[in-house]
Length: 261
Image (cartoon, rainbow, N blue to C red; front, side):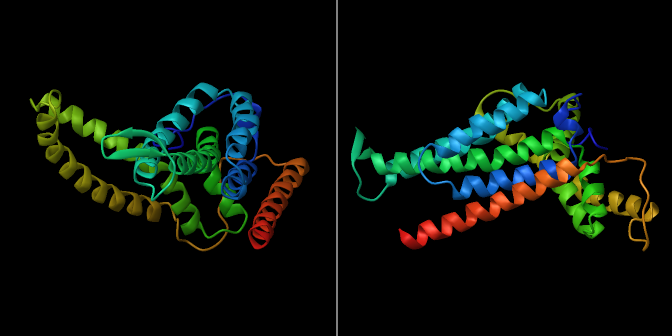
């Protein structure tokens, strides 16, 4: 379960051996930092100085960089086109017919892309280096209701699960002679035979998972046992409290700067 429907990459590294809550705290810190850091380039600098070395330490730098790039590129391009071309007023940089690329829109797109980069970078690092079931167990052991912990787990798994199911359906339809390659019209025609089984199969999958959870006593009251033992240490606890304190400092600094601005 931990690897089939997730983007988790199994590695022998110090990052993978960290407690899931430590990596979750780092992801939370990156999210707060991405939203709170001022300036145009600080978010990019924080990503390069913190996230990339941590990914290299976890031996997932290549996969991490590709995942970040694939996720960031659509946001960055859309922000640049929408904000750059349709910014009200502003200083024109390039004119293309009736449209012009505005300097203020480009600055906004660059700043927003940096925030998205740092926010998503932390959670991608968590997803690539943490087994989903380990994160669920860690949250449940800290008192979080198991239903909420399960929601967190399924959120991490929903995209890989949909992708795996869509690939299986696409292969099945191709084996029946469905044409999925070619011009845009042919690809649009292939969407319906893909979407309908995907939606119906996902509904059946939800029911099957609910039955499986009940069969394993998911909602049964009382303490639960697990074969997976999570190692923790005093230094990691201190690091988590330090990251939490850093989040508070960033939020307060941002609010104070906003009040004095």
